[in-house]
Length: 387
Image (cartoon, rainbow, N blue to C red; front, side, top):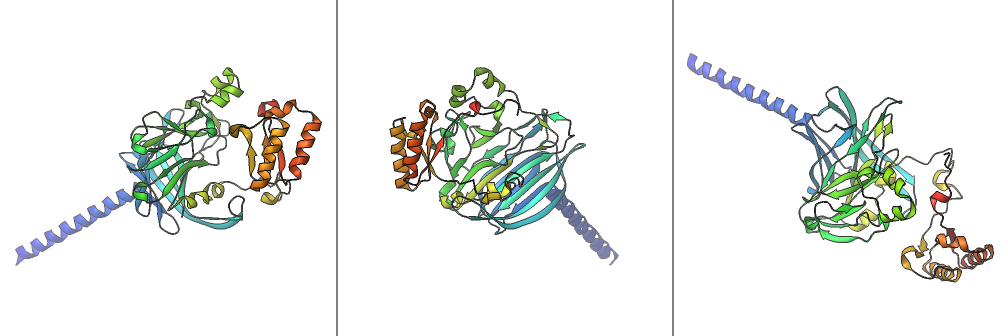
């Protein structure tokens, strides 16, 4: 009888030990894992710490959009994504409407967010995430003294699922490059891609596009393929100088681009954005970049988007379309703009050689067809060196 009681005690102690071990294992797992889901639960952004390395992944309808990929943020050469831990987290929600322009007049900023305090030794910084029904966004905020200048860098990877089809163009033509379509497996190591980088998920399970938002006091990003379905973030100083820049600026100015950009005070990276949806229409109507952006400066734009002198519209431009670069040629463009229902014609830099009478004649011709005229001038001709 005593033996049976002892055996029961031993079994109970073993069960208790297993439960405690499972509990602490669960605690350890959740301390190294954080998930933010969209309001409708379809899109998920997952953060993982594996062997001290900060990683992330994105899913849509339980299908991978971005496979498990390492995040890599460095400051003054120190990688803040290695040897890290999650110290605290705080969830929040946003749900508001605001006026906008483009394919619709009102947008909805509806998302679930989370701020995660990341620790590395005695260093702490914030990882912030927001997940919408049509995509995700994340950024890092590294505190710093107002008089301290530091150099950030990123090598975060966006690993696409096997079988994805990608559309992209390189950096040779800047934003005017021609897009090419490839299976992601056929994108070779070292190829460059400018955002937005758009791709179709395997088996027709949707579309996604990678870009950035709130690019301020920070270098712009591009991507370089790693040959393993991944696109590595590269900041401006590592990007090859493109032909339009070399055409418009000096070689000395091009060399300046190779110097990493420093940031004084707190370092706030731009939002890294992955828009995702069942079809391309979802990407076209996605408001995530605008929802992440601050409202217009009230001092400069007291009426915000309703500022009366801002009149956006569509325009025709002869830069890539050819045509005669003469007053008569621009009249022809303006005629076509009117027939298309476009609001403007952009006249390239060749108008500098025209007389006032020629410019006035073009403006009146276009106005009679409901079309406004924009005269293009290079920024170098109008910037003030003292500003």
